[in-house]
Amino acid sequence: MIASRRLRSLAIVGVVSACTWSQVTPSRSATADSAKGKQIYANYGCYECHGYQGQGSPLSGSRIAPGPLAFTAFENYLRQPGGQMPPYTARVLTDAEVTDIYAFLGSLPEPPDWKDIPILRAEAPEK
Image 1 (cartoon, rainbow, N blue to C red):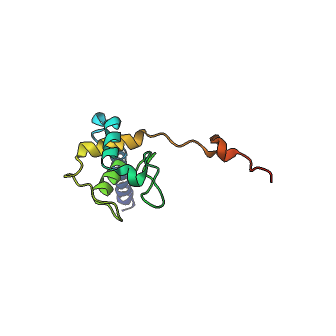
Image 2: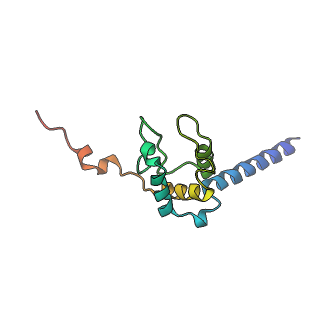
Image 3: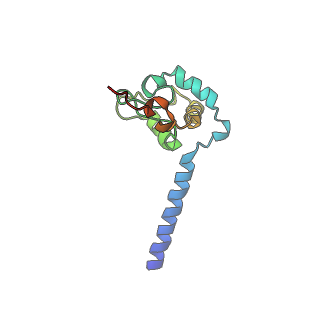
């Protein structure tokens, strides 16, 4: 009985690990084109809510880059979003276009540390 529980637990961990790994990158990653993804992102107006670098805004859309969601979660939300975002069904964006957008978001660099931005490090002027 204990052995069967352990075996079942190991099987669940294995399945969850496999599912998580498959969500990290799209299955079509070899054909993903971040340059095309950048163009699609701009053409469909994603930047209007999420910003040109996916940084988001408290007033419009959430931060989606750098380090986007796992691909499956990203695609599911894109296809059937909650909140005010319109759905981008397969009739609007093909699977290849979704993969390209995801590649673009994944290619964006992390923002610099605030300590590396001179104006944020500047001392307040004396009065």
